[in-house]
Length: 223
Image (cartoon, rainbow, N blue to C red; front, side, top):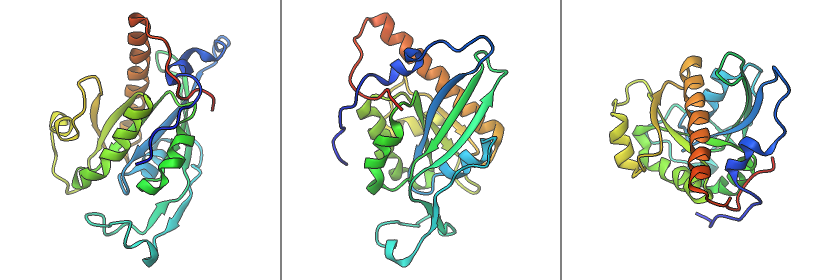
């Protein structure tokens, strides 16, 4: 995996870098939906987006057979080659929100693109498929390295064993501060709940940094 490239400003600063929204206007936040190959990222964006999602799905071909393992997901016939985009408005949330959702391609060879998609984001959701847990280590390490707050959402595929979130935490060696939740990426309410959990985690992360008096690091701010 390539070493992180320094970017301007701190991702935490996204929460208070823009002018306060006018009265009644929602707070606009960018969120990254990441995860391993076949973890359900495109499905999650499509399930919750209030607009027709932008998708860059292409059919898998024999040319990718040596690098894109379909073990456990043999029915998968397409893959994201750039990004997915969707939008979700939450006017009834404690703080009215408008979320811009960017789904990453899952293959490790697209890591350079992950940097670009993460610029300006307030945080990330890492979708996990417990049938292919090894594919989750790269995105987890990526967001740890760039210092972007993230939550882990275990996508409960049909027929997959149901592990307790703390078992997944232990397997991925996640610190206690990282939320681990379960969801069905096909379910609008489940995905919306995960996104709210991420926003709450990001806000709490900023509060913790401010209380500690830490100076901002140099990563992402501008979208």
